[in-house]
Length: 99
Image (cartoon, rainbow, N blue to C red; front, side, top):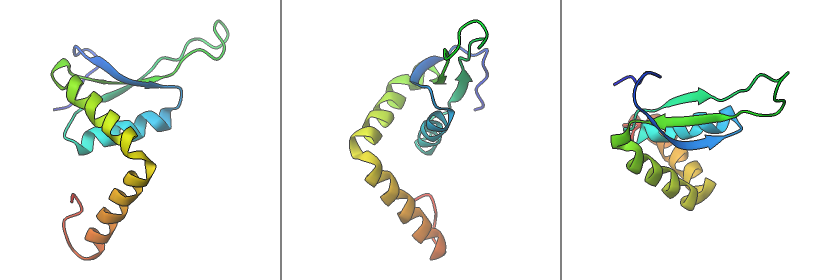
């Protein structure tokens, strides 16, 4: 299901870096959770340095999304690297890259 900005959504992650929000969105997508990224940029001539990026999901998936994000943070970057290596090896061996 493709989410739209007009849908009722809850914020599950916020950051100043769009790249970080994109990583979180990919993490949620791999867990089967649809999300969107919204920019909170303020007019820089009025409020310089103010803004950021948020990741939003449906209210029904918000709790699960927060858990996925928290679990990922707890596992640390080593776990993410290991998971990526496992996917790469599975793809190279002709296996299913989703494992």
